[in-house]
View 1 (tube, helix red, strand yellow):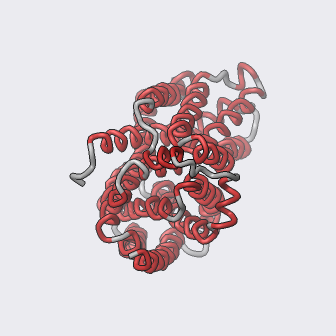
View 2: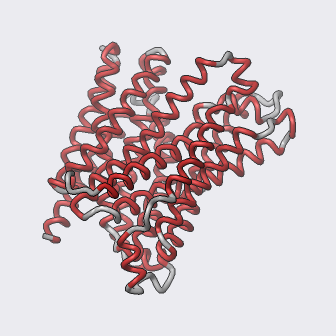
Length: 421
């Protein structure tokens, strides 16, 4: 990667840092869902209903992703990548800060959950524009032979936000007693996230518009109709490909990173502290894996790396769940190994970016990714949960199935790469 310039590295660092903080802002809600449920709903409400409504507000952020992503992508293709890149993190940071300052149900009654829902929808719209926008932004700043490394590094930053949220949540729970947490302690991670997000907005002003967009602007090659209309009419194959890759990405992240620490507690009686610690280790190795697989795709091609990585992802997922039943003491190394191969998702953004021409790239990627993530991201926990009573290995089998699909996608990409050559 020695041919990357100093400006390229600065762009990658600032983009990855901002992405990590924005993803932290989006995900921190789930780590404090129990506390939020107690504070923002009537005290006489049944626990199951309070939990359902709290997670419903969390899910609203995911449902808002497609709309926010499509709108921001539309203007990103017409007005510039950088403007939307800065807007997305601003739309995330301000609601996060306000959540940390919100009055609770005891103070303003029904307005507390209504305001919380509104802010959560704003966060969802922001993350819908941030993820595809960040991939497009970094890919158009580096040379073609470094797109995989750039997108993998950015993805590592996004997954690093999950790790940061986990670490901050753990620290806050250790610093405050249960009573202090309910009083004011829960506000700390939201206020910190909002302030650091605003700092990222300021840092991003030093980034430059992408050379690709500048060239299109100078040559008057920007879309002369709705970019999304062009995507749906002329790039359906790319939409299907990106949606399929997003299904793989969502399955790997949701099942192996977000659900597994909870599932191993229930399935194998692993203590919560041990499961969460192992989850943090796996997320760290995931971030490392994203960079490694992204860099490998620049050298050997996205198709070959995706196919080989998915073979190992399926194998390590099966190995992890089968061994937890007989050797739970090895949870840390086994989960770290699996987390590393979840990092094969670092190949996906580069392949998706290349699937669309620059003039509609932001809209094509954002539409395909956000719609697919909203559908498959919502269905995956439900499907796995429904299958668990029948099959204790359901999480591993689900990831194995999607890994098989990933191998087929990899073979398809190899074929496409040969045609380009």
